[in-house]
Image (tube, rainbow, N blue to C red):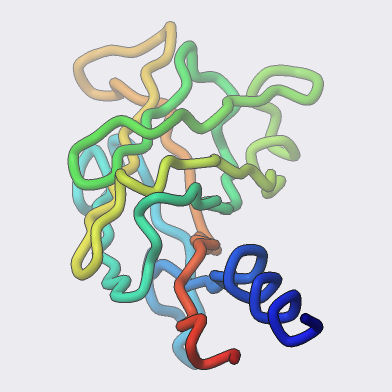
Length: 165
């Protein structure tokens, strides 16, 4: 009976583990991730696309995308994040005191999104960060440029129940 209970526990309560992957936004010295600019001055104008390969993701479980953002202080809308062309959430704009002050624009804010697992697929995935408009936009300066870095995706992956018994 004890063996049955132990087998039951492992098969139904521990069928997956958490894993993560660092999503490249650029490569800095030593291979560390550096920030990517989103907006008018973005090299990929105006959005940023990054590709990531995930072979062991459980597409029936939620994932968490964590990142840092700065400079999003005068936008009048929250920038969209898309996975494989599907909308998954928005980056929250922020203002800590006086709108757009130099100190605020240089402060890195941590943000996270909970994303349905079915937005990702096993294999290659594209994450797109869209720009944010702002009230004083014109033909030469349409977006509130901001930086994003240290993107990490936490997701669930299978482990074989037969490996545990």
